[in-house]
Length: 311
Image (cartoon, rainbow, N blue to C red; front, side):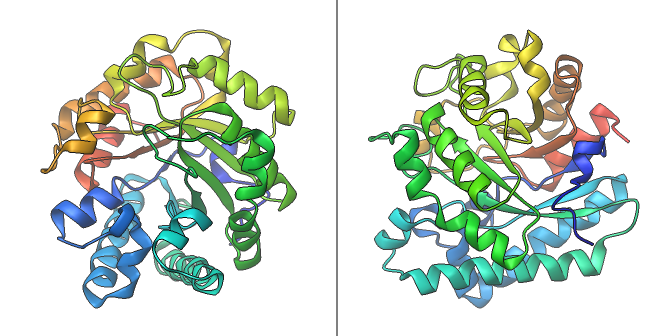
């Protein structure tokens, strides 16, 4: 099936994503991920096995819960700046995208049902640090920097793109323009600090309004990721919240600075995290996509589904 022009979640189908892929691979599976680049796991037998087990677990969970599954490519760090630091060429990077999408297509063929649609989601990440960027791009610079990944996602058959852990609106605007140029629907996912504001200091409402204004409302919807519900639940009021259709929350209440320094995994309390999502669903009228971020795995996403009772 192809969903590029009719994504099920846009028609109200409740979907799940996966959880904290990188934290699962590093802390639970003992897989080395230089620069937190999950696609590096594809280079070893142990990494391939761990990622296969991880994604199949979420596929089975989606079917068991009667949800669709938005399958993410492990390409959050697969852009030019990070590839150069890893000693990779453009050809290497292109092959990473091809292989990632082909693998997810096989997963979809194995597990998708008419009641549980599977969507291939090309993941993009920021050009700089996902918590505290040292440099910021203008919207034009970001569009130029990020233009290659959307083109590959379109070429190899992804259904959509999601840009994760964005920390300021200008980069989100540039990514949105790059996705539009490639003819791909795009979702913008911002991260927020413990006060509910972006690391840039922008409010979430301001950032969403800035992107919509600059791109004529091109993003399919917005998400929040890499933050605990208690960090942002207090800001979810106003008409702008209708643009938020997805959440990928952290298990931990730690700040981003504390998470950066953590040497052990804080996986929180899966049941408690799930219950917090019941309250978030009341605040977000268009919430259709639930998943996890740092410290989360199948347990957390299952509890989210149970607590919100989405069908």
